[in-house]
Amino acid sequence: MARSTFIYVTYIRTTPEKLWSALTEDVEFMKQYWFGVHCESQWKAGSSWKIVAGDGQILDAGEIVEADPPRRLVIRWQHQKRPELKEEGESRCTIELEPSGTAVKLSITHTIEREPSKFIEAVSGGWPKIISNLKSLLETGSTVLQDPYPAGNQR
Amino acid sequence: MAERQDTDLLFKALADPSRRRLLDLLHAHDGRTLNELCEHMDMTRQGVTQHLALLEAANLVATVWRGREKLHFLNPVPLQEIYERWIAKFEKPRLKALSKLKRRLEKPDG
Image (cartoon, rainbow over all chains, first blue to last red; front, side, top):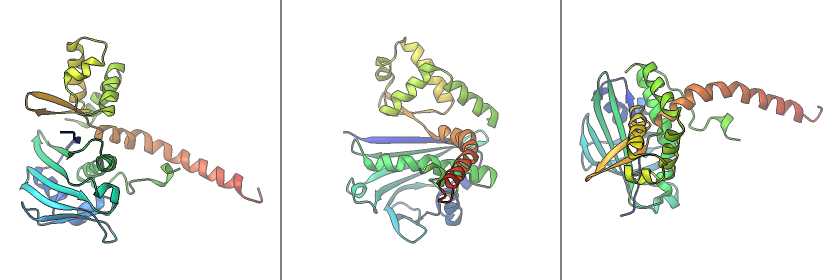
């Protein structure tokens, strides 16, 4: 079957527990590295999941398929805001945490069963910035980017 | 893994035209096998394998097993880190200076 996948891997000098918390229940921490956006869920298999913008708008929604803290999280993920992305249907995001020396290897795999996919194209622009901010916030206590699209780069 | 070592591996991995070509190939179409990549490379299979191993060590390529096939994916996260560390920081003052100049030149009273 035709599918679009991307994989992001990074090594973060932290513990799996801290990273898990940063990716799930620690909403205030998440807003700091995810440009004001946060996720809402009970983080258990079968519970609903959504991404909420600073103004309360729901950007993405779905369900937790698997949750094995602090190792593995699988989310059924559908975009909600832009019609052309929503109509592509559900994607699947797998987040894996694996201890590696003094760091944790974080792998994010996002797949949709269609090729090409506007959705995958759209999220793949955001993930590297989010992950890079998350790494920096956990390792140094501050983020590198406050805005996903810095004003100087827009024109 | 020390910070410096990561960075050295990354720049070394990028400092080779064949390895940059492999990254371009994966950018055009992600999730390829070694065989698929070899078709586009003018070198031996062992050569391509070695280049891919260096790219993987630098975390620029991530691999996933699907059945008996090893698929290669471009991992852009280290490139984003290079951008933030080596580009954004240096271009900001220049962009600011340019926009200041533009505003001054475009002022109606010159």
